[in-house]
Amino acid sequence: TLTELRSNISQTQSKSKVPWTLDNDKYGEFNQHRDWGFAYSSTPASACGSYTIDDIKGEIPKDLVGSGTFYKVGPGKFERNGRQYEHILDGDGFVAAFSFQEDGTVRYTGKFVETEYFVQETKENKIKYRNVFGTQRSGGALANAFDLTLKNVANTNVVKWGGRLFVFWEAGRPYELDPETLETLVGAEEGPVADLGGTDCKVRGITIDQGGTIDQLINVGRSFTAHPHVWDENTLVGFKIETNAKTQELNLEFLEYDGEWKEEKSTNYVIPDALAPHDFSLSDNYYFMFENPFGDTDNLKYMFGFESPTQMMKLALRQNTMLHVVPRPGNNGKAMIIELPTSYFNIHLNGISEEKDGKVHLYSTGWDLTNENFFPQSQETAPFLGAWGGQYPDFVGGTVPPSLLYRTVVDLETAKVISHEEVCPGIVVEFPTQEEDKPNMMYCALGSDDYTSLPSTGLCRINTDTSEIETWWAENRCFTHEMAPVKKKNGDPGSWLLTPLYDTEEKRTSLAIFDSENFVSGPVCRMYLKHHLTYGLHSSFANSNT
Image (cartoon, rainbow, N blue to C red; front, side, top):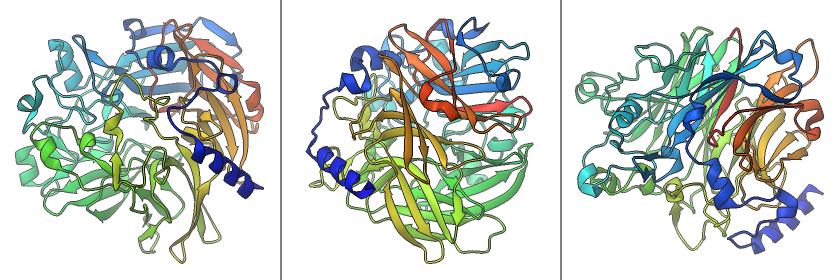
């Protein structure tokens, strides 16, 4: 039974110790430093430009010919003038686009997001700004003290909506790009950038008088989530973020935009003394987000230039996670704060959740903070992401905990968690996505199926109703990533799944296309670039008429 399987795997996992021993027969052969490290090497100059892809294996599905563009964003540059950035998430944002043309060809375009920070650092060829995850100016605390401005790296998510393409980074202001050339545009003041404060804001996410005179005088402003979600063809939902410096209250303004980025509906929600969520989910009637358990933060270390924000942050291991349930506009219900029965760190949520019989099933990826291997229970707290410093996330050395897929069932009438359990015990996954018409069909990048925390070298398709899982594993020294489902045409069932594959042996990246209805057979088509792309973060597909 599922319970017995969970028990058996959990007993095996509890005996496992890090660093892990790589099971090459099971998960393929790769060397973490040589291969995984190369996946996190800076994007080469040859990737900056545009050309028609001419190395294609298989056949591009007819549904995709002239259909739209697959966009991918992530950190793409990790050094300046010979100095390595302290953390890969401080890397400068790079966007890649694969445009499906009417003549059946696919055109690649790649370009760095030219934020004002990137432009200035490129001009002077040195690190000029402080970063969220650890990179700071040379010169130690004296060179960084009292400068609270953080570099907007624009590297987390990319979404085209209402004919406009935006790159998102949750601690800052979104940047607009030309959807075809990827040139960074300036001057936009509407859509997701409206009422955030201008590009000259020194500090984001912290305000005094909610955009009033004081905020304008000292140049502070709000930020925008890195995870807006498309609800339907006419509605995109996101939220703006600000923490009041006087009260320490977190204020989230949920906004529902129409197809032209006009604000149609707004909901304000306040959480006392909390950090903004990285992701959220929505159903017909509610928004859902986890409040991750954090310990007290010593902001003086940041103020005096000794540490970055995430280096100061600690995970609270003996504090249960809270789920916030916020009514959408038109729902007269009350907001609910519901305690989970365990300490859990949420990373990503399924964008769309279904309500059934007064209950909602949420699907999320995250860390089990009771896992003794990574979070010693003799301690009150554990380091956060700022402890991941280095060229790449160190899985084999035991730095990165396994990310698991959870189902959290909530009774919306009693405001109680019925269950919070793994969907498929043992599978280590990230970057969950859903099919447009079948949200119960989820797709993830797969690291292992026995709790071993490893870089993703496989992909999986999961029916969350039944916990059935299908898997596909890449060739040796090849890493997998997030899949973007594209609904098939003419009433055909399923989706085409677009995903980059990072081949570190050939040192080049390909865009692969899978058929959701024949998933385990592997890609029906792979389009090989002439170069590699850096292992990125999130992706999306935009129809030609989006």
